[in-house]
Amino acid sequence: MPDDDVNEYQLGRAASAAVDKLEAQMLQKYKLSLRDILENPSEYSEKPNIQDTINSMKKEIDDYFNSVKAEYADEEKKLSEELKRMDEVYKKIDTLITSKALELNVPYIDPLEINRDTTNDEIIVIYDYSDDIEKLIERLLSSSIYAADLSTPYEDYMMGLWFFSGPRPRALSVNAPTSPLLEIEAGRLEIDSILERVTALS
Image (cartoon, rainbow, N blue to C red; front, side, top):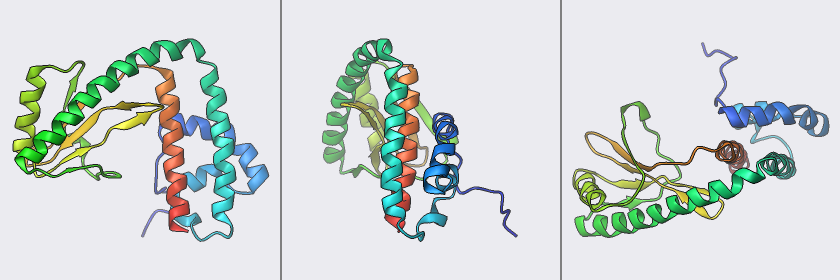
């Protein structure tokens, strides 16, 4: 028998912290628990006017995240420089994977998500692009059933992450800067993606 206390989804730290701040005002205004919507999205897809409610909630959630990010104005410049470097590496690698995958006849996809056991992934984290990276990518592609771009956007930049399938799955990642702004944005994206799932099902 299923455990009624088990949620469909466990929120990450940044998303959960945001919900803690927003929950009381959402309950008062919409008579719905934001946390319950996010942790059990499929239960809300049939609720009357849920799309309109979620669209209104999203505006308030964005306002909250924008106000939190504004507290880190000094961090923004430093982060921008690191993200620019990351984005340049992303573009070089993405161009290379696109051309090599075509040459080797390996499908290169841009999926919404891949359900996989990440504990078995061998993750290679790089900082800069080099000729050795080009050789590595060719090796990874030659032993893959497919390759996938799992990179995530942050403002105008891309944070590179690629998955190479096969008997021994591997992932290649561009070293991400450490910044509270990235954690804040990850919380926003997590909440937005779950709310979009609810509206897509309704």
